[in-house]
View 1 (cartoon, rainbow, N blue to C red):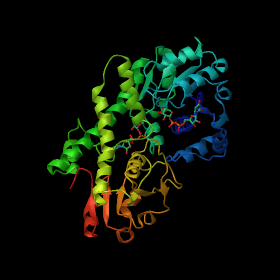
View 2: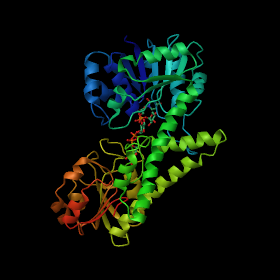
View 3: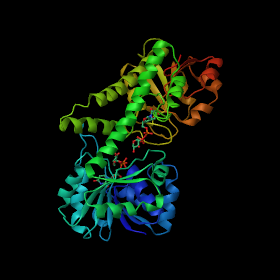
View 4: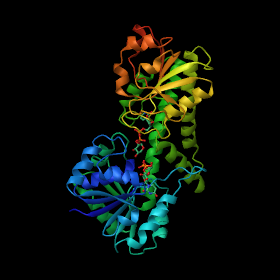
Length: 424
Ligand code: UDX
Ligand code: UDX
């Protein structure tokens, strides 16, 4: 049964949420404060790279079930459901900044239908449902938590094929109404209280970040004891309780969620009286991982980075996205530059200089005269490059593969000094 829905905020989360809700049959109005973004979206132009999203947006728009307006107040008048997908950035003290959520709630309050339901899709700290209720001052409007579990690069797939839909509500009738929006997805659906729903989101992201920090620490152990982390992870992952997923060693984790959400959860716990030292350790290991990669590049470049030219493949926080927010690649390049290196980067999704980094047009030009090449993002195209062209461009055939992406044997046969993560 189709419902009238508004989505406030059309970023990675809001645009995917609005387009997919329209795709499964609902009537959706999306609102944003960015006029240029609203105009481009109404032309069917997407400001973000997400597999399958452009097609879904265009189909839903031509079916008349999706449109974009400027300003939240213009989106909610006849809407039964209003999803809040505005940013919850990390504040100075590590806590989540809820000002956008509060502003959006205050703005829409006078325009909401009676019995409308406001839904927190943004990742918000435990207790935020109350914050929105207070900002709305509408006892006839329910507030429900419905956290997103979308991975960038596969956000459309993750929305349409969720492992679970989580709904946190005090009012069971409101929970059932929100659950009805997702019935066509035939996914596991759980209803709980708001605090538990909000905690599920943070705990899930923190656990995933912990898995990655754990495997990066195991990679360091492997290097020290002469083991191969690829085989160690394979051997671990056969245990269904561990699994193979999210155990790929790399340069450290980043993006717009893990860093923000892990710091927020430490802060939430501390405020509630629990010192979350395990999660603080997960964050610390991640910081150390950036420095481990920098050290590998320094050694590959002969022991010093001062005045040395380094080529970097990858700027985005992971492959198949154009998002560079909190990218480990950019953090590591910054630390290389801080030690005097002149770093040039190439990334298939980035076509302009960024964060004080010169960006080259192709993976070969970026290698011209460089003392070493470092692989920071796992774009498939790096696996298929012409190694002779790469070797001819580099001043020395030295490569640090921070994603264990490349074929180590092929590179060594082509005369490269190859360094990976957690393997000799
Ligand atoms: C962000 C956070 O990353 C995520 O953790 C949270 O759950 C939701 O917000 P994302 O979609 O990645 O998700 O943010 P972003 O890509 O920055 O998009 C936010 C959008 O909201 C932007 O288009 C911005 O213009 C818009 N916005 C921001 C509003 O419409 N109103 C505001 O008050 C502030
Ligand atoms: C994450 C969660 O996966 C998603 O459920 C949540 O809704 C939002 O945050 P996202 O940040 O888009 O999604 O990307 P993800 O694929 O989780 O990767 C996060 C970081 O971990 C990236 O920097 C990635 O390169 C890194 N990573 C991931 C690893 O280093 N190793 C892995 O095995 C997996």
